[in-house]
Length: 277
Image 1 (tube, rainbow, N blue to C red):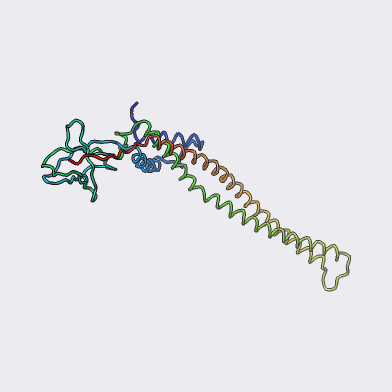
Image 2: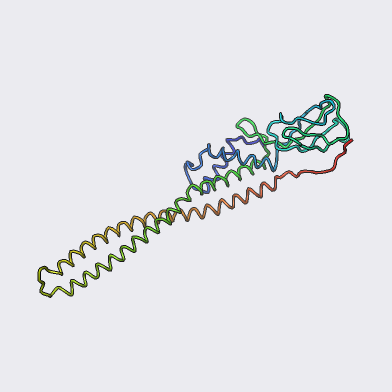
């Protein structure tokens, strides 16, 4: 099976997101963002299942030190073979006492120009023209990219849930105002009934109460319209909240699948005491 290039990895991740999010256009998951996510996940995948490479170095006269700073994309040294071309192979322990330099743990000093084979754990290469990944590593990368992208999307829409809580509080405030206003209107109407047959001096109280009641009814209508607006906004935001809960569960499942995949591809390290002579 041919290795997938970067575009193919991104396309597979998009398809999984499209199937779950049911989108015809994926503006929420542009290729540029998915590529950034995939490169981050690639490092994590490489830490668990690295690209294994043999690098050739040479010794310096009377020195046990080897300079490894020129080895590109180096994550970790797996083994060092010195002296080479022997059966069985002579692997050596070493220490890294400063960045870019390792020292062989041997009880003699090498001669100049002797071959040393350094077996390296490296970051995988993944571009549109080259890839060092195996199929199971590719699937792990896709799973991790999908999980991270899903959580990023959830974090983007989470403010809408906060907006729903705010809308609910504002709607409750308007409801309280409306309740108080209706109580006042009811009191005015009751006063109209009490004063309707009384003879007024210097004015007619029923008319005053009626005018007040009309103004209160108009205010009530305004509050009702405002409440309706908050209710429509709340319904929309609560719908987003429901979808958010569903996608959160799905994203958690994808994350768990990614972790299982990482565990399956993890390359175990071997530690052993090696000869020094």
